[in-house]
Image 1 (cartoon, rainbow, N blue to C red):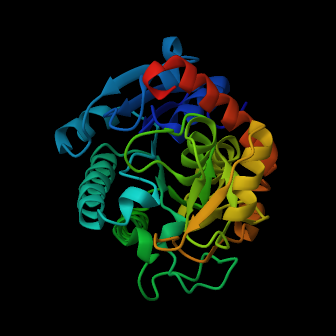
Image 2: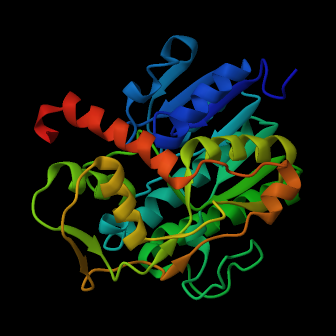
Length: 329
């Protein structure tokens, strides 16, 4: 019998991009799943495949009483909810993102402690790492200097989440896993709206805009893009096998430049257009990738989905979205 079978599991942010895939995985494992989401960026439609098999609650977790109520009776809480945006929004809204996430994280962890939750997952981010970190970056290289400058508000909120999680573990013995996912992509990541992430943004530009495709920065910045379904598997394995409040990176072992990324997107879309790199816009850290040696050691899992395979599935989703919403088409 698998670890998750029969467990009552709460997923915060579970109608979102990553959370909805996690809900599907846990339903397949036989868990009794509750999803809570404020639907600010999530969408109940993401849960269509499992909506009859879960409980969905719409509420705002910046309200502590709401956190207390949704955590009651749970065997595990998987805390994915956060204000998380792409670079186009986050680099001008650090204070807003920092303040909101600190309140959200504090409420969720306090509610977990008040309800004696036996297992927790705290989802941090590779944005906790400084811009000048050695790449690929190991888990120990953190909290020296400032977080990634382009996402500094978000990065600080995730550093504080990790500290809060560690203190829960050290003070009360709470079993809590911490993960630092890198650049997650895949279906269900919003393709329009404020703060879209780089891959859905570039897919939208490729499929629907005219003229040159504008890519922020030099195009030489590198990322290790990791597919959402691999990320979900890794998160659940860390929660099960390594709940000791020590961060675990989740990434993909091969890196990709923005130039390579847009070339693959155009190839898979069957579209060829001029590309312009706008060096007046921020590009984030020049090189951003993480080691996954600890992930392999504690879970035995390695993300497997090649970029072109994951992008093909993501582009197919984006095409369906553009057909579904006439104003996007």
